[in-house]
Image 1: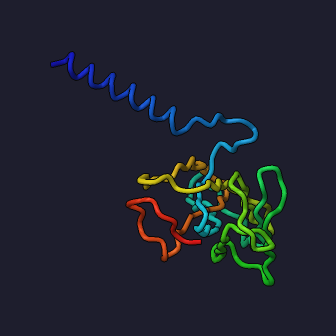
Image 2: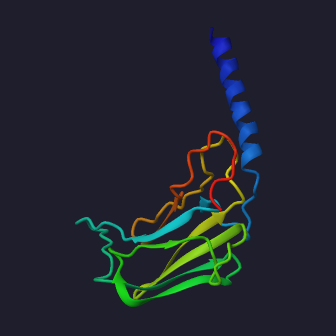
Image 3: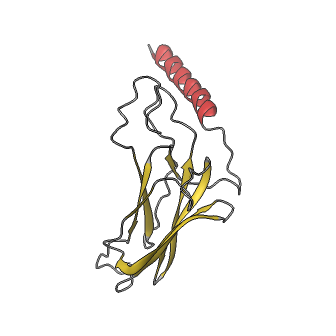
Length: 178
């Protein structure tokens, strides 16, 4: 009995290792961010900023009094700005939200790759990483995100991929939205 359980466990670990090697074969290099949110063409990215919650403890990390969002931009991993939006009136970080349709300033779909979303506030710049991939693999409902674990006392730019309503769940492969 023990031998069969041990053998089953070894097989599961071996198969899981082979599966992970097939899916996550990109090495971490300076050209690839360590963490990112994955999006696909046709999706929209909702952008927000979250400040840490302040607790009355000795290491309290309250946010600045009232930082205001001045602008936000999207850069390629190499630092080239592909989209930028300056707000006419500064907005409180608690009420800031924006969306990006994965198009550059000319309205052209950006190429697959890694991007950095930067939110500029009166207290400094905050960023998060985004990965645009060609198309969602068929029959695979999961996205391959490598989430950034937020630091205890640091503000965090939040990114969330939203699929347009015209796209039904994908039980089979078909083009969804243009």
